[in-house]
Length: 165
Image (cartoon, rainbow, N blue to C red; front, side):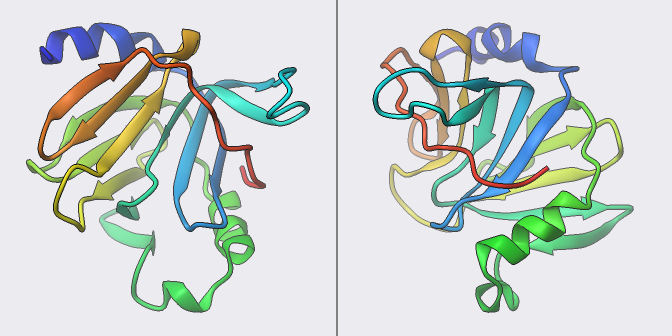
């Protein structure tokens, strides 16, 4: 997949406001952008998700503010429940998404208008995703170390949003 194709697909997301950030029970983190949409389908009826979402099911993460890590997976992270982590996430003001870029060949960084940065950190070998982007219309952009950036046109089954920002 050409990176220009991925960029043209996700470019409309840049400048949209983060309307929810949350940790799920499986300790994955995700960010919803633009606005929340309430599902009407049978599987997720009444649940909400962002028009755009960025997350990962298996990568480690860290949130950086003013050159300091303010929240991260690892280092005592296991002692806190997803609810406690969501409380910490809820006090952070993310603002709008400005950019998304490769930090290394393994890691992806998101930069926000408030100066916060979020890094998705690859901590495994194989074909697991480092990060995914759910786009309007059911398209999914996925980055894996093995395959790079790819667009999947499958129908998206979203996990219901949790609590958060």
